[in-house]
Image 1 (cartoon, rainbow, N blue to C red):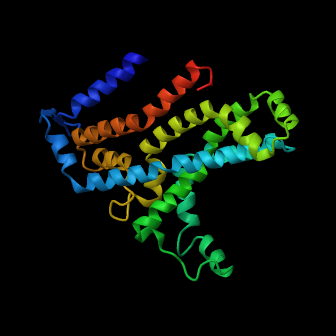
Image 2 (cartoon, helix red, strand yellow):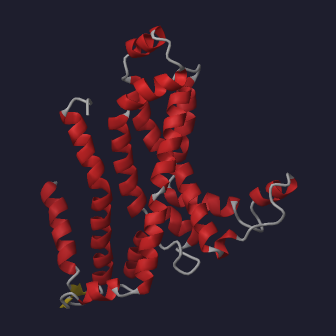
Length: 273
């Protein structure tokens, strides 16, 4: 398996130095693909969109922590947890289509309700503005994918000994003090794992944003994964697609490696760091 992974990665890097349309022979072009991509304004627009979109990791994590802690001691918590996980079981393309319909300015059910209750004065054509389009795909991603972080946090939460909470009660700690001094420190490892997994997925995902906005308006929501998709499925410029893919891998590693290192240090010290 390791050979397959590393072999694919090395081959992908090798192809960034070639021009290839998948049909004929590849042609060596040296660093031309990197010069083209890094000198292309659309790439930087796409990179900025990717970084902004990656911030959904923290909204997903925050909701997961609040939900996991809130339902940890309520009745029927297993039923509630199952309901929470349902959005994660829906395929990205399906949930993307669902949000396209729900938020459709003309046909969707959301805007008439918001206008009836006085929350909005008129329908928002969110797809024509880069800011609102980005907000929509970030909201849809948070809704669909926070359950993975919720599962990780919940599993770790169940492992905290009840004696720690009893000791906190003996010392008269409030619920907030108990959360910050007992619960949160023992969730550190799970939080780092959740951040790492969600960051990797959020930076590389394509299906849901592609389904909702198609990368538009313009390239305002065209995250790097969509750019790769367009190079492979649209123009068949596989050398450029591989180049953007390699840059995306490097970006992902830059963001994720500090979390992994922190997790390793925490594990080495038995969670006492």
